[in-house]
Every structure is written in C-alpha cells, then in structure tokens.
Length: 196
Image (cartoon, rainbow, N blue to C red):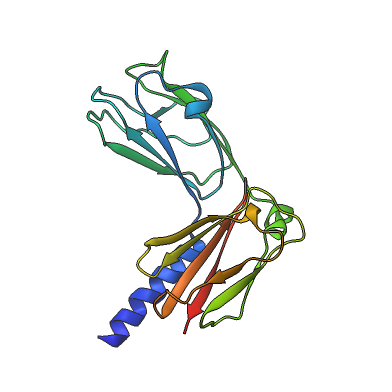
C-alpha cells in the first residue's frame, strides 16, 4: 500500500511540475474582443465555461495555428478545454453567434530570459516551521500559489507586498510534499517544498 501511495504522489508531483497554466474564459452571449482573447505560452490550457443556457460552440477559424472545436454545447456550467501546443495565432468564434462571440488565443514560447527572471530558490528545504523564497532582484506582479499533493490549493498570495525575500510560515501545514508555484505576467515556475 505504501509503495502504491508513493508512486501516486511521485506521479502527481512529476505531472504538476511539468504542468503549465490554465486560463479561463466565461463564454456567453456578447463575449468578444479582449474578454475572449488571451496571450498564453505553449503548453497552457484554456477552458471556456458556459455562463448562459444558450447553445454555443468554440471553433477555430481557418488559418488558426491549431484546429479545435467544442461541438455544440448547451447549458450553464458546460465547459470545453484546449491545451495549445503550437506557437501562433488562433482566431475563434461561436458558430451559433459569430458576430457577437469571438476572440483570439495567441500562443508563444517562453524565452530563456523570461524564465531566468522568475528563477527562485526555497530554503531551508526540507523545512519545519518556515521557508524563505529567494527571488530575483526585481519583480512585479508576482503571485505565489501552494498546492498539496492532492492538488488542493492551500495558499494564494500576492508577493508584491514584500520588500525583501518573503518568509512563509508553515507551522500549521501537515508534514508532506507541497508544490510552490510562482507566476508573473508571462512566466510560471513551480518547485517542490517538503514540510517535516
């Protein structure tokens, strides 16, 4: 049993460390332009969620970098997700309401410079009562999310309030493995922290 649990936790950690960002669009009558457009990275997922009871589609237009289609879905709470794997521009629309429901998903590859700007260190790791995030010299718009091994988000914090490297209190956390995810405007990096 312990071996199976260890394999499950290890697989979750590996998948989460390689995971990119999920973006959300509320999909209903009249959503278009900037409300339906995103700039994302290769490997990111976009999820459209229906917010009205009218039938809609999410359909790529000719010339899009990737072809995708949700098919016709009806009802509040319906959703369609697409993970983008090709760099380029993806214009799309609702085939039922093409004049009022449309947008663009622009996909780019994260540059090495952007990645190094967000590089961070966690210490002490493993830790007992706290850890320190050693951050790049300059950053803005940086947020931290912490997930337990089951994928439950336990912390969401804006790091712009800190004037130096943040000290995060973990005394109330259970012992185990946590994923620390830092996000800026166009960069995401995730590292593992072990609470003893």
